[in-house]
View 1 (cartoon, rainbow, N blue to C red):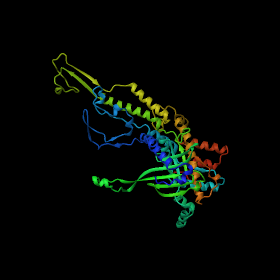
View 2: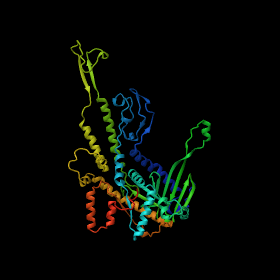
View 3: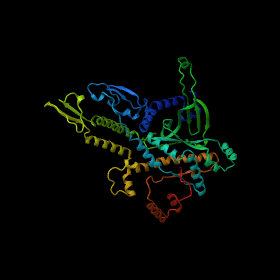
View 4: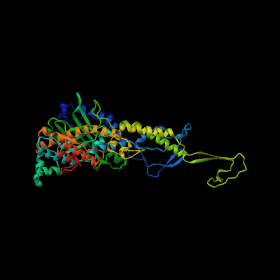
Length: 506
């Protein structure tokens, strides 16, 4: 490798340790993360053109133009039919039914967490500093993506178990001042339009943490590595020209970043394009780690997808079995004896059949039969999915059975207690990460001489909105009670949304 890692020698990152970290990530971590994303996304994979005819043991049948990744969890008797004489279920391709019960549960969790804009509230010592800090944070979070950025990081964390944020300075203080002079504007105005600081979400499949050997919670260094496609095609090789291969592909570039508390190096195909120092972090990593659900003594958190995979496979297997049973039993069939050649029979409403054979008979069989044990098994699987995820169908507006008199807000909260408690717990972990990223943003602005703040004035509180619909009458009564006990009127009005200030990161 041609990477210059001398600047990272104090954190134990050298050529040997880098090779080991990349190999472990490519062989162990990345395949596991890919499986989690595959089960969540279950994207259709084209395998043939629509209407293509494939051969089978029973003849030629129209094939589906797609397959689904969750089919990998189905048993072999469903996915690899053969010509076994001992098992008639294997003589023809089976109909596969995939119901992705993972995706909508993950989406519901993300919606409850970031369904509405959140507010970054400064706890600085003076009101002027608080107003400046909140305005700057809102501008930078919104320019980095706002609520879309927050939902993206939440989705990645729910699927993979954790996500990392990178606070990046995009230009120097001199360049920013030059841009201010060229636009003849105030720094605060230009900060709202095009800030020199950006927050980036790092896909866990691209991020490789180098943790401290004595404390798994601390990062010694961080590696970002991925391949991206360029606009120009690859140059034809001599071998391709000899064999007559004229198919061109897009050129791929390997992007690698090495980050520590003091340095930040960027490489393209092992060619250094930036080797910067990071004194503005004041000895901290510009990386913020957020665990979805805490996993003791591990850097990675607990994924919401992983515990649902076995139940998802069981559900898909039983759905496919039921589809096959319905296909076999949904039509009535007739066994006719002593009525002559089958081609001469015409069975239908009002048709009279005459025969001289006293042993003649017509027997019916088939038809969809009730299977109570099958229905109970489906219900048990779905209840297990509800318990593991904490997301009942009611969270998406699907009301099953009789609701009765459960029409109050308290009754709704009791019904969604599992999901709301999970959301409250995540608000603590996610909020801590967002507050830490905000402190790094303020440190960067202080380094760029855009917004001078002391460390004590960089404390941030995250105000989370109620994910459930709020009754206006109850909200006003609660606000009046808060004012009576001494809560500031301005804060109560902000909670009600009757203030001219920004609503938060949108």
